[in-house]
Amino acid sequence: MASPVLSVSPSDVTLPLILSSYKSLPITISAEEKPAVSRLTLPNNDSVAGTNTIVSHLSTLIPLFVKTTYTDIESAEIHQWLTLTSTTPIPEETIARLNGNLKFRTTILGEKLSIADVAVYARVKGQVASWSDEQKTGEKGYRHIVRWVDFIQNTPDLGLQIPTEEKVAVDPSKVLVYLEPEEPVKEKKKEGAAAGEDSKKKGKGRAAAEKVKEEAERVKEGVLDAAGKAAATVASKGKQSKREKREKPKREAPKKEEPLISPSQIDLRVGHILYCMPHPNADSLFVSTISMGDPEGSALVTPHSELSLPSTVLTKFTPLPTVRTVCSGLNGLVPIEEMQDRKVVVVANLKPVNMRGIKSAAMVLAASPAPAPGEDSTTHKKETVELVTPPEGAVTGERVCFEGYKAEPEAVLNPKKKIWEQIQPGFATTSDLDVVFDREKAGWTGDAAQGKAPGEGPTGRLVTEGGGVCKVKSLVGAVVR
Image (cartoon, rainbow, N blue to C red; front, side, top):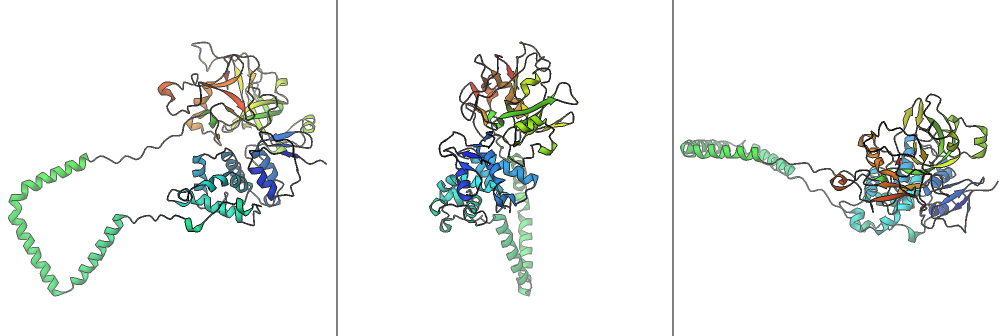
């Protein structure tokens, strides 16, 4: 049986490290094709694109990771770090998050080695090598990442084959250590305690006792003599002191900066509907089995043992890729024939919801006519619905984003923050039938744009990593959701 063929993108730093370190992988490396996005072509000519998807597949062929058992939480954490570090360069906030994660951990998962250690090392090592000594081990440096990098590139348990000259240099003599200064309050307590102890020892002597008694009498007499003169002054100072105490401004806690809201927070991908059927408990819903490039073991994928697919579908898509079950309110609006064996655009990081007894783990993006001026959008009837279609040649699992808003999406959108609700109103179609993000339609103009990502223009087209534009069939000026 022929082995899968791997075509590696020239910009991919992860797969070359895996291939050089684990040379017994049963795959063939293409020496000709140099795609913009790395691609793995299976023996049946199906292909998957994207480094993360390929890395997850290869990890199932590497003995070290096959023999290691990962919990669902650990598998989700592996997937999370693969996603967070897939942007070049890795964002500063992700670097800080990684440093915090490694504070009390030997590996990304704690003690277990995983494919995440290999992939994240490959992606971060260039940045770490360029850091100054201050950035590496200064007071606010990323010393935990530096320690982890040194461990990963040298531990024989992981077996990475890295030439010495390509390893990140870690010089112990250049480690900068900043000790926390002892708090003044603690010093005063120590001084007071020492003085008290000294007085206690001296007070044991008779002469000291007499001296203390005489001093007390002298002070008492002095106070009585000065009482009349100082009464007004003391009272005045007392009132002034209380007034100053009352008027002393309260120390305000520093305001926490909220992250910018941006369309890039939404995980949009190319999905492939393998099969669609009516929902057994809801007339308005379809239930689709969609492949969208998820790694094996992801908590969002539906186990193959739980699928109920026709034999014709199983035969056509062998080996069966990872899939999610997705419910969509398109029954009666889109012919079911148009929902079979086709590419769509999916929203992959909405929180899964239970829809009439079936867990839905994504959403299919579709367009419908915009409400008439003054019409309530919540009661607007969708008479025509068209699915958003990726460009021809788009690969399953390929990332999709709006021009001017390319960044790493959230792992899962927090429903409480209403991120989707603040961004989706800007999804629209143009006279060219392109799907775009329109800042004005989202209300991101003037003062209302505060806290919103600026973008590079008033509108940005929805494009794949390969540069193709996502479109609809015929709806102009439509709402997309």
